[in-house]
Image 1 (cartoon, one colour):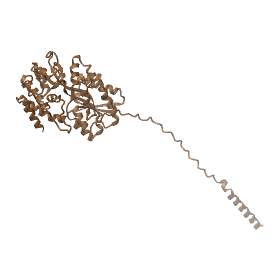
Image 2 (tube, one colour; image 1 turned 90 degrees about the vertical axis):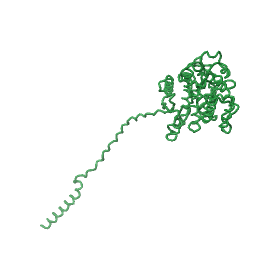
Image 3 (cartoon, helix red, strand yellow; image 1 turned 60 degrees about the vertical axis):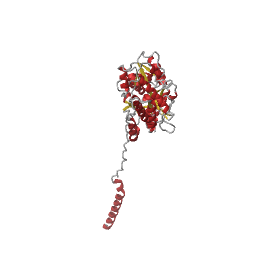
Length: 420
C-alpha cells in the first residue's frame, strides 16, 4: 500500500514539472520589442538673399598734358570737364580715369608703364605731333585702321590730317593745331602783303626769335621752296641755291633795317612779342598760340620765299595706347566726341590754340577767320624732330653770321660744308 502510494506521488510530481516547463515561455515577461527610432524630418535651410553684386565700372583711362588739364579752372578747362562729364553720363557703367602727365617726360612715362604695368597704359592719350611720332615709332600706339573713318571726312585741314599720320599709317585724331603767323599793327598795310618783297619795300620792321636754336622761321622759308630735308636714303640734305636765296632775303632785310640788329639775342616768342608790343617793331613772326594769349593786332599767313604762302604747323592728337583691345572702340568714340566741330570751335578759342577743322574755325570771330583760314590752308607739319635738331642750329648760326655782315654766298657754302 505504501509503495503504491509513492509511485502515484512520483508520477504526479513528474507531470507537474513537465507542465511547468511547457508553460514557462507563456508566463515569463515578454521581451520588449525595440521601438523604431523616430527619425526627425530635416528642416529646410532658410534661403538667404544672395549678396548684391556690385559691378565695378568699366575704366577708360585718359592721359592729358598739364596744359589741357580739365581741373585747372581755366575757361577751356571747364568746357573740357563738362564735355567729359557728359560723355560719362551718356555711357552708364563707364568711368573716365583722367590723369595729368608731364608732356616733356611722356615718352619715358609710357615706356615705364608699358614695361611695369601694361594694363595701366592709357586707352586714350593726348600727344603733341612730335611725341606722337616717337610714341608710334616705339610701338606704344595702336593704328586707327578699322576703328574709324573720321579722318576721311572732308572737314579737316590737310596739314592737320597729316598730324595724325606716321609713314602713311593713321595713329592720331587731331584736336588742336598751331601755325607760324605774322602779327602786325592794325592799319599798317592798305592790303595784306602778298610777298616778302611787299614787306621789304614798306617801312615796317620785323622781329622774330633770331637766336632760337630750332630756327623755325628760317626753316619755314627754306622749306617753302618745296625741297626736302631728308633724301630717299634717309640722309639730311640741303640745296645750296635755295640757301643762297634764303640768306639773300635776310641780307636785304638787315641792310634795309626791316630786321633790326637788336633782335639777334631773342630766343622765344615771348621776347619777340614783348619787343613788338613795346613799339620797337611793326611785325612779329610767332606761333599763333603765343599771340592769341595777348591779342594786339591783326594776323597774316606767312609768305613763301618765292610765291604764295607757306608756314610750318604743329598740333596735338588723340591716340590709342591701352592694352585692352575691347576698350579701343570706346576710346575712339570719346576722341570723336571731343573733336566734334562745334565743341572744337568753343574749346580751341578758349584754350588759345587753333581748330583742326574748317567748320570749327567758321564759328570764330569774323575778323579772325580769313587770315587764319589762309594760314591753316598753307600750313605743313613740322619736319621730324631729329632733322630739326640738326638743321635748326646750322641755320641759326648762319643767321648770326649774316647779322655780323657776312655775305649770303659765303655763308651758304660754309653751311653745305658743315652738313657733310
